[in-house]
Length: 293
Length: 282
Image 1: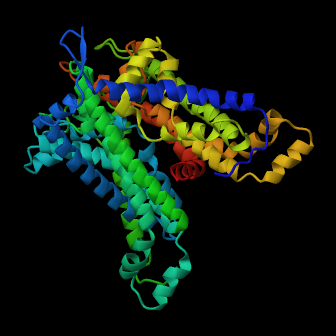
Image 2 (image 1 turned 60 degrees about the vertical axis):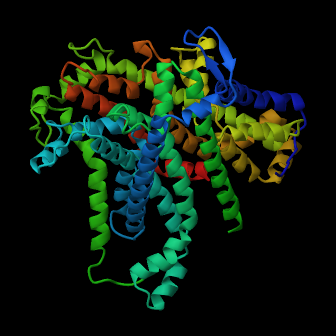
């Protein structure tokens, strides 16, 4: 890191970094350390005594079928959300990258979902998918589909995937658009002169050149599907029916809220922390690479 | 354009129109629903054009809540959300810009250690350390307070990194010139650096305002008093009436009110928002 070291004054510098360091230590490092410490403890039923048990909480966690169920749910949910929000975002970005009339108006509308809170997005879709009342639910029922996300786990999963994808399209759209605009026109023109048709140009030139953006977005979208969708799930399905929409993060929330098993909940948190750290590390390696790109 | 096609730009228009419909339809439906009477919505035959109840629905929603449930009026939720969002945006910008200033323009012991200490906070979203953070906030007697809503959420490094990157591009000559004019570090900050950072600050404000406004889990946990509730939390309670029928017109009016500020900010300040978003993430 370049050091400008232009101003003297250690005291002033310390004062300037103090607020951020204080907030980080109190609300970031201390709770993270607590979670780690707690994950090694077992508390008796009345919270009177605690015992240090090393990795027992983790071992117990890996013995419960519900945990594997939550892993599976998270995997299915994330895969669907990442795939559809990236595919739709890319399609719209490619179209909005054309020099067509009114493109600015399309872009303005397409960024709206980003500004809508996940929980509010959920409410909008619950309204449309409410059996007996919602417009789409009624249309489905007219066509012989017994739509009911309150009772049917698959329907509940479809509902939260739709909400999560809708909420995330804008983000991917903006990044893909920025990526497309940084591709030099001359490269594409050269290929056109060589006689490559639009579809071929896209798959052989544009898409490979977009790969840094795509990769970045995959990591960001996985993080999104893991963590930022808690509001969606809590509002739309509360993890149900029967745990069918309870992802790993939602399970930490539920188990911690019930409060009966602090150690187990903490162990789940720590596993999640490790997952995020790995994802972030991957992202930074990619950023480093892109600098040399 | 690379080449001329027979059907011109029909395909992009069709795809984009389809995209806009998918994106805007839920929002449109919420607006329409908020103008109809509950009974019209409840029988599932709501028309696609506005009704005549808009004024009283919004008046009741904002001012009093409704008679059926003893709910807080949405007006007070809007206020809580607003204070929280502005507090998070300004707080994060304030602590980040001064720490980035120190890291780039000063030489002090543990400078790199400080940088990394801040940098690592980039990694963990509040969701994964939620209960310990809750406990600490509770031990500090910050439950049900704006400081409790705001402080734990300003502890992350994105803004610091953005300012650091920007400060590194400020030419050394500028600092030298400022020094020659006899300016100390504080005057340099306010007279030179801050004016240069205005666009960055504004862009970051847009993003952080939306981030703060849309928070769900944290306000859900740490507010127990109804009058501290934010609108994003409040809306769930409105649709969650287990026994009674949900008052959908009120719920949709609340949804519209919850969307309005962030959507307005994004639409009006698009350019800044996009710039900020793409810079912050990279």
